[in-house]
Amino acid sequence: MTAGNRTRYGELRSDRHLVLSPVLIIIALLIKQEDCKPAFYRGVRVGRYGRPFRVFKFRTMVVDAEQIGGPSTSDDDSRITKVGRFIRKYKLDELPQLINVLTETFH
Image 1 (cartoon, rainbow, N blue to C red):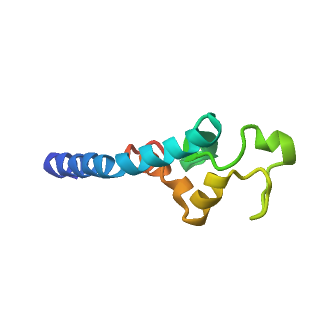
Image 2 (image 1 turned 90 degrees about the vertical axis):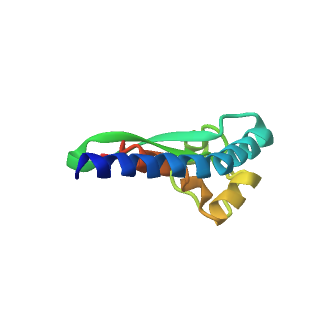
């Protein structure tokens, strides 16, 4: 990739951040408003060459949900918040992972 292409690619990534920012902020505020707890869930995934990396998602369950009922969930799980149910329905909980992609911190 040439220096010019890298610069253009960086500009496109910045533009996407700006477009997504209002959506991310609104979702985070809705989650925070529901129970005054953190809006994001931070997990660890395995990336390229087996290296772990942090992944961020919008929190859709009560805090410490794994300790309450285990790691797996179903659609009618009581640990899922009202806002979380909406977010999951439209797969919006995955949006913060775009930050990993755009900043290339997923490998």
